[in-house]
Length: 304
Image (cartoon, rainbow, N blue to C red; front, side, top):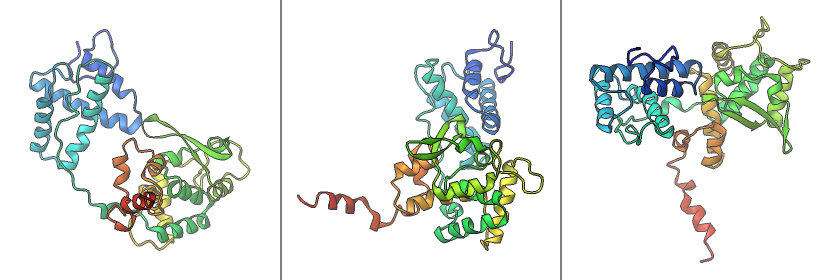
């Protein structure tokens, strides 16, 4: 009989309900997220074992909050505690959805409040983004394609690196579209505007299939690390005097869309955030009284 902290290998005949629930939950994720959540669940299972608890059946909100407190007592920062709990909260959420437990004990568990330092994640402003996009294609067509996928379509580094020529070959309702599988293995379809298509086609050249963005020297497909190096090179050439990562470009796409007046819901679709509150963190103009909803509502009901 495996110990309660064992999640793999998958042996349904000998695994507990909690272990089967964990394996089912983890099956939704791949690569880095799968490894991260596996570690977080092993920590939770080990804590339950030390305290004589089943990791799933009979767990109460008080147990979850005691675990959260224990993480803080181990010296973890509040932001790290919140991160560690992502896997545990997801585990209970899906166990409840699957009918394995009558209620989710983690849904209302109190987490530390984390104050976001938004100055650290401002990305690029409009002029910097324009400069970045202008400079990128002058380095190589591959740098150009990467820059536009990150800075206009708000792709993540791994998503941009994984784009294939076949992925943007379709047309849907008059729009050329890019199809991809994003975070959490969620499929997405987004339009490819003419400027973006022009850069992608320059990168494609005479090729008809295969990975789109290649290493300029070896002609092999890029990976996430290559994307980071290429973005750093573009930022240096564009004269941006601070560290810029692929996420900075994704951040810039979302913040500049909001600055341009794109509604929060539409920006959420661009970002592919499951929770609109995540998108709200990108809105630099939340405190801008000129854009306050009362102005729009007053104009809308001006006839009363």
